[in-house]
Image 1 (tube, rainbow, N blue to C red):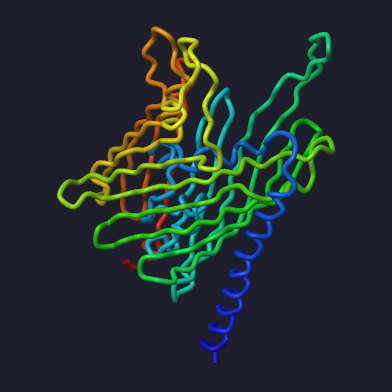
Image 2: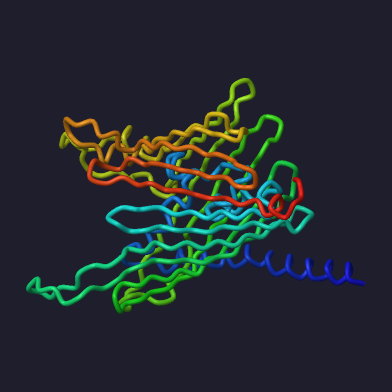
Length: 348
């Protein structure tokens, strides 16, 4: 009797979560018909974890145990993520702080659900009048909370979507929105390669700051990840912002107009991992656009580069990344992943 009730409950949950796909595409339709003004909630494009940050900042095709990637591309959910929780923190640019938490659960028969939340706290800023007089301080922050669903309908293919509630606060002004991500992933277990396409951050702004509707930072990314068969190395390549060809600044650091080749290359980011299937990993990445736009004339500041590592100890995984932005400021992120299956005394 108890088993029948559990099976019935799982079926109900699956049917509800399947509707996430319908909701996602409805949001896509609303997004395409309601985009006016400037873009808002740019924190959605900040790397969700230390590992994503070190692999160029845009990786969407890493399909393994790392539950954090399910928040970016829900079609990456798989059995290795089951009952893992990822917690991440970063000291971000200009004294702001970034945090996220992600969880994935296997519902059996190829069905998965996920929960994710993230926050970007900008801290305190002096409140001044038009004459520059300081009248106290105000705070600002962005936050999101979402649920996702994925279905592995074939040995190699998985589709997934998530829906997120967004909120933003600047002093006494607030805004809110509903956004969604939807993706499809191809994963070949024998060749250990993954190809993923994901549409991110489409949706509808419910409440704006001042009555003027603003765009969500929609983007379409495609990524490829492969673990080499004869050498302990994995590489990830991402071509991001497919929805718009020209994402480059108008002029380079020499004052020359940016040409076709630069515009083409600015979509690329990627990274490598040494010993990807071992308890200790070394990682390095590069973001072409960041490297080009934050470069300093006649100075070597290594903008666009990122370095990091991962280590597994018992039921815990620890990740660290250092991302070079500019001589004036860089970003460090850490992550902790807990395997709840192993913590409960069971083996995978």
